[in-house]
Structures are given as structure tokens and as C-alpha cells.
Image (cartoon, rainbow, N blue to C red; front, top):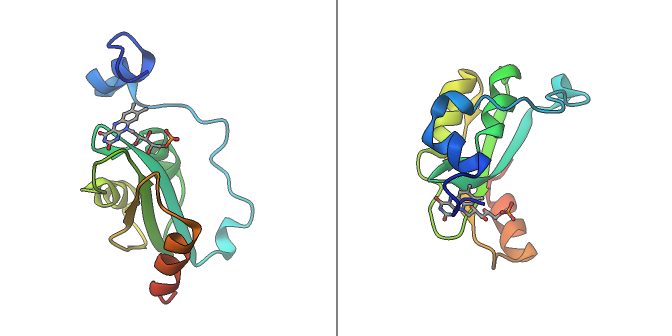
Length: 117
Ligand SMILES: Cc1cc2nc3c(=O)[nH]c(=O)nc-3n(C[C@H](O)[C@H](O)[C@H](O)COP(=O)(O)O)c2cc1C
């Protein structure tokens, strides 16, 4: 609950040192075979939800096209994709796209098709 200052996510927001969230798994089957990777996440306080950082930091994006996309209540994608790209330090990262709760399947298909991947 991000409106409760004592919640786990609020404590992590207030203290960057608490954000190194251990994930159940960071492995992706056949990772080496993918040349394009979509990285999707909710926006938390203007940046990518930090569990995504734990995933990006340990996977090798060398030679991959990476497409960040996010959901949010109102914030834009901002610097969130760029920050993940810096963390990955490899791969070709596109600008990315933000979707609101009202985005339709057609909106998303149109975006994906427009990427000309
Ligand atoms: C901890 C937390 C922080 C959030 N911060 C923002 C924010 O800064 N800007 C915004 O527009 N939405 C914010 N939201 C709303 C989420 O981006 C929104 O709930 C999410 O994109 C929808 O996906 P979900 O169903 O996984 O929550 C926040 C939500 C949470 C839980």
C-alpha cells in the first residue's frame, strides 16, 4: 500500500538501500535465442518498479533490442527505461511506451506493429 508510509514498498521508496529485492527467479528459458525483449513494469514513484532492476542487473542484454513499456495511473514513462538501460549496460534500448488502464488490446497491437521489429 503506497499510501501507507509504513508499508514495505514505502519503506523501500524512502530508503534506496532496501530496494535490492530478491526475485524467485531471474532465468528466462532460451534467453540466448531472443533478439528482442519486451520489459514491462508498473511505474512506482516515477520510475520502474524496482524488482525489475533485480532482473535487468543479472541478465545479459548484449546484442538484443530491448523495448521498455509501463503502466501507470498518470505518470509518463519518464526516465524509467533509460535508467534500466544504464543498469543493463548492454543492448539497444528503444524509448518505450506508457499505457494507461484504459489501453485496449488494439492500442497495444498498434504500438507493437508500429515498432517494425
Ligand atoms: C508503490 C506504488 C507506487 C506508484 N507510483 C505511481 C506513480 O508515481 N505514478 C503513477 O502514475 N502511478 C503510480 N502507481 C500506480 C501504478 O503505476 C499502477 O497501479 C500500475 O501501473 C497498474 O499496474 P498494477 O495493476 O500492477 O498495479 C504506483 C503504484 C504503486 C503500488
